[in-house]
Length: 293
Image (tube, rainbow, N blue to C red; front, top):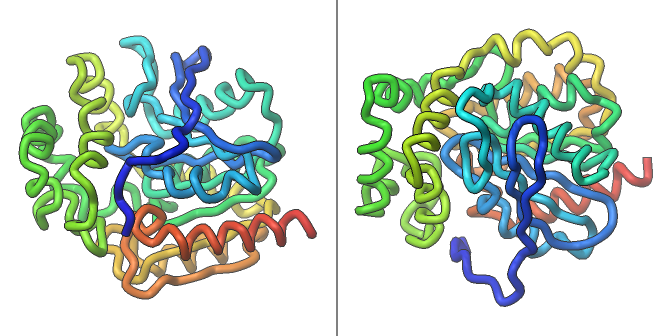
């Protein structure tokens, strides 16, 4: 895995004002827009390999969700996953973008499902990788982290992972999310976690984001999901401790627009970062096939 954040041609970075807050994003490329949505504790940095290598085909935009990255919002702003789905619509409005090829991972994949269910006319194609689905939110393996956060340990835990990157890569922290956690660069861990520690407000926002994890958000959009005709790719790792591959089958059966389901042997939740070349090939094929449909 090339985990480095170094890039000879930096991404363009920007902010746009929306009713939900000042939303940060990075982008590269021209043409039809592909919108990438990260999950909990991360930010748009997750998608650096997609922005870098797919910008010949799409205007690739990676957004920072509410309570994450460089996005700012008011102290009373709803930061739930459903609120984040509505924020994506506001974000696209602010950039005068009508439709996108939507790509989501982890809780960002759950948010992508909610967005696609509520705003189907804005989804040219959909790609879901290992993510929350239906009543599997939060996944059982993530519940100890949520309990720690609810008990007041979130700030100290994040700081410990920043101070000693081995803690982040350990089996007790984020190590199980990676096929090869030792290959992730220190600078990438900093890129994810330091923005979460920049202020008490940010930490409080993240705490509220975590506390709001509830399957009601995805269960209540199931009927709309079962009517979604957007060409859909389901790509999943078969060694994910958080999201078993059976959820890829559930999504493939639930979404009538599903064109292809791919299971990657040995891959874990963050395979779009670790095995980006394989994933990018799948995205290229999916986007081109959707355009020809």
